[in-house]
Image 1 (tube, rainbow, N blue to C red):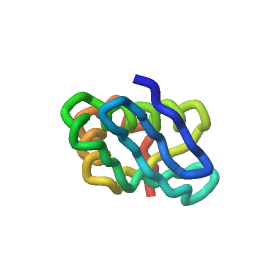
Image 2 (cartoon, helix red, strand yellow; image 1 turned 60 degrees about the vertical axis):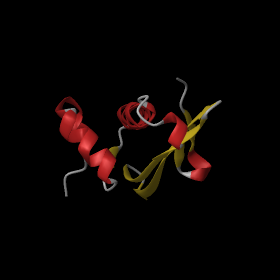
Image 3 (cartoon, rainbow, N blue to C red; image 1 turned 90 degrees about the horizontal axis):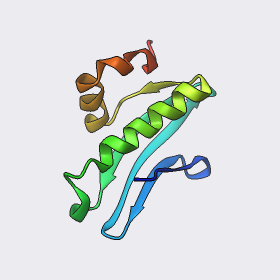
Length: 92
């Protein structure tokens, strides 16, 4: 499942025949992203699309030296399930 990062649209997106998934973010500073909304088309739910979007955001944060704020309820839940990524969370 390929995730496309669209920095100009402030989103990570997956485009599949059954629909799309997207994770929207705001850049609060050069090194902090607020992950505020994840949404997946109904036909793709339960297939790991939202999780893959969050994983892509983590990969981006790790590569760019950024930190993440999980203000989306799903993203916050995902981080609770994956404490190994807690170092990517902004502390403040």
